[in-house]
Image 1 (cartoon, rainbow, N blue to C red):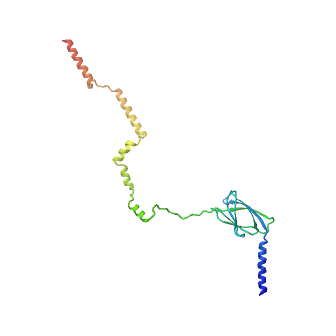
Image 2: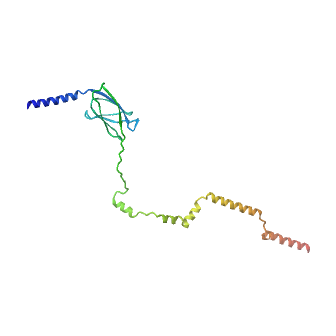
Length: 207
């Protein structure tokens, strides 16, 4: 029994020792938008899940660099993007590991949220009862062609081109007719006065 316990303790110690002996590497890279490799993603949270979730923030140009161990699990998270997990490879030829990280945009559709202007059901009931029902299409048409509406529109709406052309043509026609018309002197009261005066003057001269 004592031997078994000793063997187990030795295995645990070896495992812990092996864990501590994982080589250190300088893990660096640039984080890109997976849908557009020419676009970097700034300020991404980079967490080392194998080292108590120690976290750094990538720079504005997507660059990051920190010390980790081989086979550490690294998590990349950013608002609007799906989380991504990367494992640092083992048995690297050098003590640095550089890579491109590509995170994919993630669209989350939130449920529809309706905002009502009534704080209580009593306020809604009061406003509903006192609400003025809008006119239907037939009533709107009847109001639009009423005599009062047409009279008001005739005084406020400007004339269109056809109405102005017709008025100008009518005025031109009236001017032409008047310019060629001959006024009957018998219909002129002043002409009658001049005629009577001439007759009266002639009779006086004859006497």
